[in-house]
Structures are given as structure tokens and as C-alpha cells.
Length: 121
Image (cartoon, rainbow, N blue to C red; front, side, top):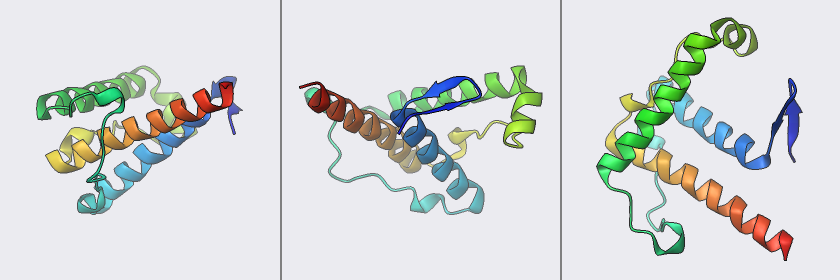
């Protein structure tokens, strides 16, 4: 169910992606990165080819960049809100864990897109 938090509307897909990314970060910080597992049967929607390792790395770099931007520009907000004072640096993860995270995000987004199409019909 969507929520409004501090005046910002957060759709279900956003909440689920944030939760998934938080889980990946928690595992990375605990040293349990090897438990960030990809679905071995994952297929991209619409017959798209699998992402290359370079594409995965660029996506992770973009995520890291966005977090760094948020932390550096809104440090007091994030410290007061969640206690965050540094970006998660998902690029520290192994290539296998980075792929699992990116594919997991894509799977969440695709599942939500399918549900929206079903609800619209």
C-alpha cells in the first residue's frame, strides 16, 4: 500500500525496492554478501538480452552516485532521519552480488508493472 512520508508519495514499488536494497546493504555490512543470491531462472522482460557485466557495473555506479549525492547534499536530513552519514557503496560487492541486486531490482519493477497492467484491464 502506498504511503506518504514527509510529504513524499512512495508507491509500493519504491517501498519494495528500498527494502530490497536495504537488505542487500545489511548483508554487505554483516559480511554476508554471499547470501545475496540471484534467481538462476531470471529472464529480462520483453525478451531483452541479459545485462553485461559492464552494464551491471554502470547501474551500480549510478546507484552509488545517487546515494553519494543525497548524502552530501542533505547530510543533516539523512542523519536525523535514518542516521546515515555515508553512502552504501554497493560497488564493494562482488560481481555476483552486484548482478543479483540489479536483477532483483528489475524483477521487482517488472512484477509491479505486470500487476498495474492486470489492474488496469
